[in-house]
Figure 1 (cartoon, one colour):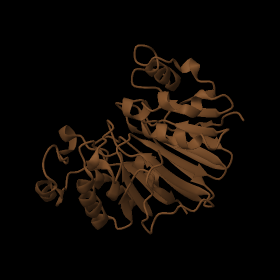
Figure 2 (cartoon, helix red, strand yellow):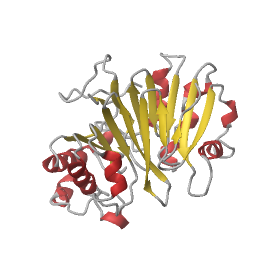
Figure 3 (tube, rainbow, N blue to C red):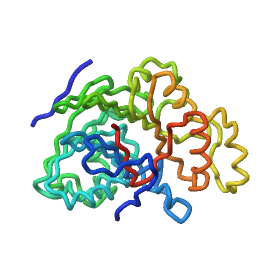
Length: 311
């Protein structure tokens, strides 16, 4: 296992009791995008949000960002009040939903800001720099990545690498070979948050690599998105919430089961599901949260703007 060390609209906040908005907390997670595949906006997704994946961790004196979906644009607008900005951006993969917010990340266009960008080679062999550059090459986008005036530093990851940022240790693990998807484990001051997304649909809770990644984690953030061809149709797809409610029980073959089994086996303290199918509306997600909590009481579904304290 190698080690890499680099050179030197406001989302609505939830008021649930288990959330923390204490600015003095030194290890916090904030969700800026929680939707998988494609953004889903409208009156049916107001409570949970419709932006594609973007997760921020503020760890000690460092800012870590995971994935750059459309939620990255909202985060970027928020950061304009805090410049100059230095952040470390980690991509789980280069599928469009994970990178489509990069061209709209305003702080990257402003001189004086610095972004360290990490990612593994895509399934076609393209580096993270090449994948982000291709997305911003005409006719895909009118402005090339070279127009960004911030200091962009790129680092190529291989699954299994460990990144060290001062006292922060970030372990990596391959979670989906076909898309070269990486899961991340962030440890600081004896506390750990793990971000696992787009795992193989047949990944078992007994998988040694997965168990090692999530071992004794204070917080496990897991992808709830499913593929109807792989796990059975768990989405609404035009059906009413009432007619779909019956499918939530027992819902034995759905994707979140692996997460719950893994959390129990690995001694995880809290589970948060995220990256929902675009067809999952707010009412359906309410039912989904109840179902998951019945299997793992200390769990919840992510909402855009939600802030969690890791300790």
